[in-house]
Image (cartoon, rainbow, N blue to C red; front, side, top):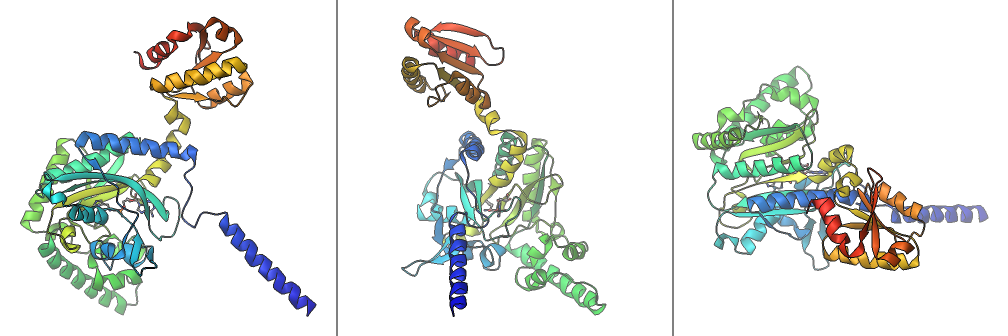
Length: 450
Ligand code: HAM
């Protein structure tokens, strides 16, 4: 009896400690963005905002929770995103909500709800924030991940808008130091020509599977076997070996699209050619979401099948979620993947170092002067780093060194008395005394050349 009691207590203890361990962990596939990481996210935000500003995109923020039906109807019931990956929850008021797995459907919802069709068309919007998909976490694939995106909604389905979206994404990747980006483009046609192509594709797969199956050879994966009936285009972008082999002889969608869709694609490609941007036409690129028509595209690094970003035209989405038909095109860029690459090239100090000046003090009176001077620099828009909590000069200079500050200002007892500040150039080690009343002017001149 006593033994049994002991075992039960041990089990209880084990359960308790497992629960406690979980308390101290982020949920699977999610992570903290620590201050040293956040520098990269700030760079991404800044880069996206500069591009948005240039091309005239307004910043929009939609809720992280939306009605789950928005994605079921907009993205599609039979897509992996809705079927397998969506975090859905029922509220106490019995509403079915979902953590947004993407933002395009939400932005279209907002366009309709806020009457944006009354604004001059098209409306250009951009966003930045976390998204959630219940996927198998691995390198570059998370359950909470970040996207920035650009959407052009309304007006005409002019190929120039597809081109502006593509070039905005390319500029963003350039700003994030992603080189040798591979751009894959395709057209998946319109409702009419796609329906004909889908039937052709279904016929091809059904015939092939029947004949290969008879020879007892390997057929497509079970997901694709199901998709042939429910969402046949998705069979084309399955990455499993058997399915890749199978699609080699499948009819190409580019041979099947109608004349207006072909003209549209040609228009997009001509604009891209105008900028001499290389791209690959990939007739198997279909994207996993139901709202697309005509142009679809993705961005990759050489040798990787994880996309940095993707998008396309979605002229039917407004209608699919209950609004009036509205042409639209957009892109989303996966910041976690982009930042993983950027991190291999630049440290956070590289990103921050640019204009920051370190201020060091020696003694209590100098500490007060340094504190007041930082405030003056703040008012003048000059970025400073301090370690006022450290008293030894050596310890302070160590921080300046770690932060790669190009310039250190030093105030000691003598400088307080004389009303001066020492400027030390960290590259050359040369030091000069400058009047405290002129220090801001002098620092600005040295850093910004003005
Ligand atoms: P998406 O292709 O599903 O498109 O996602 C865009 C990008 O988000 C991907 O290329 C990838 O870089 C990143 N991403 C997706 N899932 C994950 C994940 N689990 N972990 C890390 N990164 C991920 C869309 O979301 C569409 N809304 C794009 C769009 C905008 N279409 C028109 N407008």
